[in-house]
Length: 342
Ligand code: UDP
Ligand code: MG
Image (tube, rainbow, N blue to C red; front, side):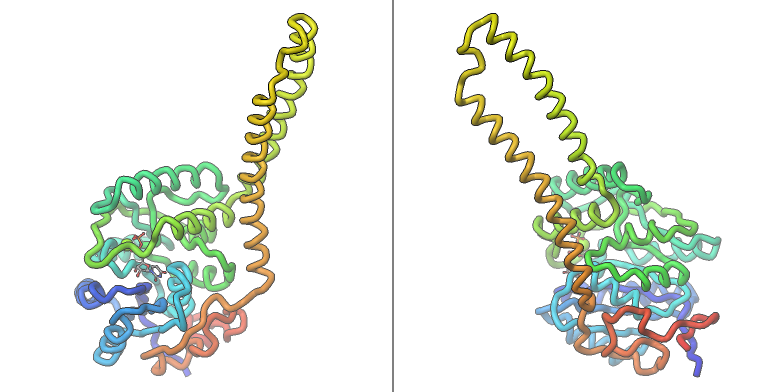
């Protein structure tokens, strides 16, 4: 049996967004109806503890284009987006934040570029409103450092807000790594990619779900997923320190012979050097540990997420069953030429 798949799947991850869901729905409906495309909106409830789950179910009950996935607990933003991608059947898929920082109206321009032949259209933040100077500064620095140390060209000042053609979505569906940096994974996939500029709005309601701790984790996922640089700089540090040591031996010998035995004799110097060296070593051990922990995550090979319940998927027999969610897509019937799952 074949089913008609929508031309655009829009995915929004939801973690305690009760103040945003209704307006998000309204704005997306307005934008998508104006676009003239057939569409669906997949809302992924990432273990919300406010009224979001009920609000999502209410939308699904009144509008069959709204599909809802409820996770069994909070699995994190990137994982919620991943579930949406796994379930999406559109010719193109749009990722958008639920807090309306990403204006849905930009989707028009994205669709235009996609129709013009680009497989990925990502939104580049030209300006950001309503965010702390620390977030602005750290984000700017982060994207630039990342750009320098990775082999994959991940565009700067770009979040997950983007449109991806089905060909790219299929690649992402095959990438089952556990610590995910989706914007990098999209770049990795290749194809023709382009950016559209936009002004990132302030959050409509509520607070950021990314405290500093999560931001650092996210940055580490990005770096370890796409770069060996932290491992490689150890060699440079070793070379520089070794060179200093070689230089120090004759210099100290000569100074002592000419100026007497007290020269460089202090304990303080020794203590400082030992502390400095331990700091260096622990710093690199931390990085090494980051890679090792991620190897461990991969070897356990747990499902990426657990779905407790899903709404409005029943009309489409070709979608993965909610019970199988999180299981690698290779275990799900492959799609045929027209994109319907066989
Ligand atoms: N989010 C999520 N799970 C989380 C954290 C965030 O699904 O554990 C969602 C959140 O509801 C929002 C999007 O991810 O739709 C982006 O989060 P947020 O706006 O807090 O991040 P920021 O824009 O501050 O970087
Ligand atoms: Mg936000």
